[in-house]
Image (tube, rainbow, N blue to C red; front, side, top):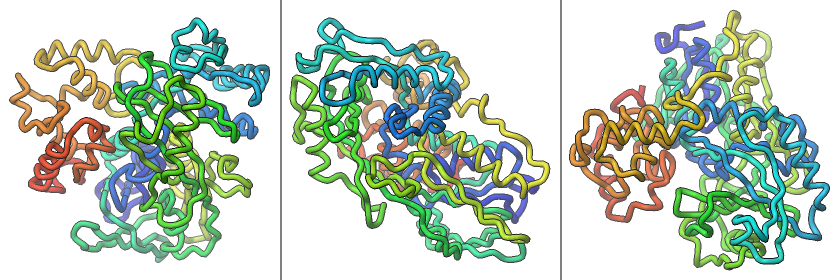
Length: 510
């Protein structure tokens, strides 16, 4: 194995800066491999920032008998909760019941399996609800009289990606954003890839002993760039979400059963909003141009309005987003029936450098996917150390899974000028590294230019230096969701600030 960061020939080239690519880069770098990760845009710039923001087993996947996937995902809920309690925390979901859809005994059996398949230890179990008496029934139409409540977890999806990239870099990996892999060829037992800096147009070549194609919706395109003629095996499915002002005062979420057999989530979001999603539609075209349609917006509004007292209309939508899921094409007739499991294919002709391609997967199982990827590549790296991430914390996550309130109190004691809302946001974003962001500041003025919603120049510089931020959009919609709160003037000021900074300065560009 090469010594990470000190050899022109890398052990592993990872193409794709979504959750799977960053997870694999982190795992490989932590085992001592020399790793380079390239992403043609921003980290989590596509599918990985367009999820429903859940770490969950996938209750509805039980209906499709995907028991292995559900079990693995349920186990991972608590593994990830312990690894990153600043960006992952428990949620309780309320499932109202009504006649005509899934029968009560079927739901009860499904939730029993959901409680027990994954060896749940932290999260509370399912319970039955009388919606006529429980506060969870207050926002609902009065004919919903009973339901269930069960556990899953929330995740800041794009931050999960960035923290994996940060940990990979801290273990010696080179993480290169805005760097497109134009082509790759096998030569003398190595992969030789041509890379182009999307900002300057400059090209370079990198050599690697193995390559991982984790390009998400572009996985088939990357196979072509690597000279592979294998069938695409990828099914593009669009999922869209809408965000409204907060629809109820309590902190629980809902899962609604739709008449078309799908489910819809309605989740408290960023304290003042409600996130509603998702759709499942076949997608053709360039995933970079994906956008929600008026029809999808109307569908999601109807799905929620069938349950809540106060109807939701398109006029209530304050933000929306869409993403393309690169599912493995298992031949399912409908998009919602296509497997969410991951499939890894390894092309490794004798004497030639291996290429591992990633199809499908979901955020919840990204860490296990990375372990499986390394297991497939291990024969090509004799002496490779074993798996290590199951008990490892992500950057900023080195505190108890339920310790965020205490961390907020400690941060305010150290920086008494912080208002409670800002202290909570900083802890939820950076965990134990929040103090490193603030440094020696003795007041808000010491944090530099203010852009709104508590965002200051010092935090922006941290993001640029440590988290690969290059544009206002990177920060406002992926490293955070402050785009919901910062006005046009603040966004413009932030972009001017970033434009005046050296784009490749600091550790993030290493």
